Amino acid sequence: MPVPIETQTGAIHCASEPDVVVAFLADPVALSAWSESVRLVEGNADTGWIVVTAGGRAPMAVDVDARRRVVRYAVQDPEWPNRGAIFRITPRPRAGSVIAITRTVPPEADPNLFGEVIDRELGRLAALIDARA
Image (cartoon, rainbow, N blue to C red; front, side, top):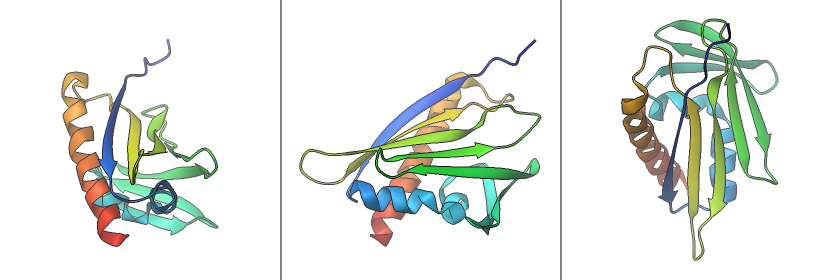
């Protein structure tokens, strides 16, 4: 029987323009600076990415559609199918961006509380991007 997929979505405004946000997310090296579960990201776009969490190491694909402003992190984890996140970045009417993320909820997490994790991570992400812009 397939494992049900639970997701949570959140969004935040940031001062940086959409192309800056997409470029930042396209290079996942800083993932450990804002994600609560990621300890380290190794590798590069040419050799491939490895994400390191408390649960171990796993390959991660990073797919970027700059035209549509969509970035997808897909972690290949046999214990947690469909693990990852999809980001959609949209321009704000006057300036800046809205960063929306949809993440799969970890099997051990309470789906009712995981939204709080996403909110904290988005806050750190937006602050990090704006500080570097």
